[in-house]
Length: 190
Image 1 (tube, rainbow, N blue to C red):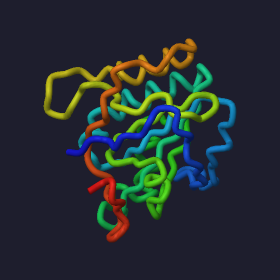
Image 2: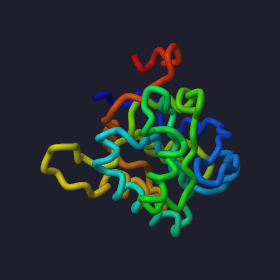
Image 3: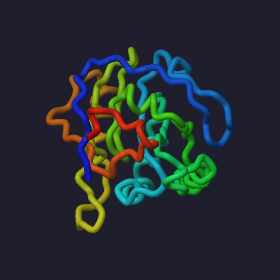
């Protein structure tokens, strides 16, 4: 179990140009210019993701209708974790009813640019793509009785859309480490 790296609020969203595992179309950060952007680093095998994935996708899908763009990104090594291959990610997206792109970060460079550490790792950017929220989905964890609600992310989404200051406190995401390809793990993730 790992916690997310610190990234200051107001940090610009790094660029990305990654392939959607379902459509095989290239998706760029700039495709979402002028919209708040939710970036979720996730995967198919992690028990922390599995615990929240249905509610996480439900929340993201709901906020698409409110003008918030969303992408999911997997940077895990599919050779070591076959459940995180693009084909299996596409199956996961279909099973969950994901209505936003699920991108595959084959070399992990986008995850590094975001300083992502865990799955799930959640970033919410404002309309200017400045970091507004970086943290957990909620307090739920596998094998614990706390219900999965998404309350931390929902509070941040609502505050952003209402033009309010970022919510405090912001708790770090907790989950499995990103499964980097051999020799590719960044220094901040060790």
